[in-house]
Length: 488
Image 1 (tube, rainbow, N blue to C red):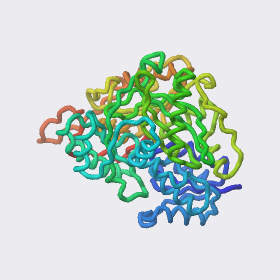
Image 2 (image 1 turned 135 degrees about the horizontal axis):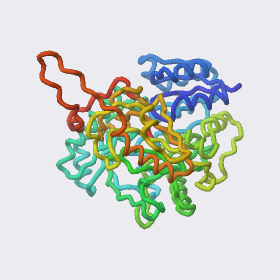
Image 3 (image 1 turned 45 degrees about the vertical axis):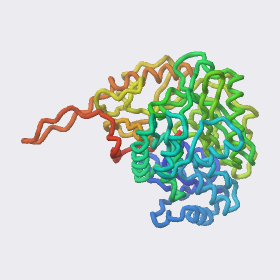
Image 4 (image 1 turned 30 degrees about the vertical axis):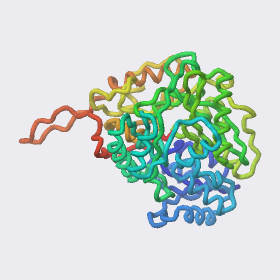
């Protein structure tokens, strides 16, 4: 049987899903750059030929570590599904002479290089400027048209996003973004190979989205993602996923497969995704391309990743279209023939629909919950009425344990302040959207109230728990039991 080295880090599809599909195709050796949650650790021991958690010293030269481990196990393929390990794995594959994303992997990670590449190819995207210093930011703010979005060039899951409405807000945004990236790095949500990545940012104009010309009903977010793969340098689109509206500034709340786009509009979206992927020059990897939708059929590229979409995008594709894209990619990297779809799949080929919801302490209008609540999935499942035939489940490895206090939503922290990740299966995408809307509305009412600890004798009476947003100048420390992020 062929041998695969799987490099695991935070983010990406649930590791349990990935392991079971990869292990069905090859002997899997796991190189875990992030600690495994107990439920996954047990399955990893059962499914993997070996599980190695390297020391910090061993991780200091990540490419050499991956190469050495691949050679030790005789790997026929090396892959990762984490955004934070994409570049290191691509470089290791180059050194080993194995199929991988290739030299262009960094272009699909560094948003500065990505945007420069698309600019040279004349592709539609927001006006932007790369930023590495506070002076760079002030120059960009003076040049571009507000409002602007400051984002970390190597981040994922909308981490460290800051909206700048005027030049006076630039310094606070800069400080807050840098603090957030430092905190994310301590929690393991940061680029693992490029040491200077934490200091790289990009600032861009915020384009106005509009869904009226794209969807027949309200409630959809103003961007979609094209899920696909590149094999031998040829882009092969698989499907298009839709979204609910983001939470300010641009944190993803829910992804839905398939997007209910008419066939002609879906083809336009896929054509732009193809141009974006082709311009980057990727070779052999999954892809996830996000595209903003505007009025009069306008589109703008948001980003392309050299890996499959995170959260539950991969399980959703399998459920809706019957495609095990993890296993198919493993087969391709091992040199086996794979029957990828001849054309992008749409609602007419779908068997129902599926969506993933990131639980954030924010209501459907984007306002913070009135009080603190405890995450309790059994209560949610019992109390929230869904459409007939719909089923709701929780992803344990991406969720806090029942009874945990739901974190206060931090706009700068993005998906890092999630409490849980839920998966919904339904008859069609409209039903998923309707059920998710009902779920978001119900959560702050049905979840148990978090009761503050009783004050000690002689101490002031405890007031109600604060639901104010974290200080803009000091990052909030997340709970130790924080789930893995749901990077898009």
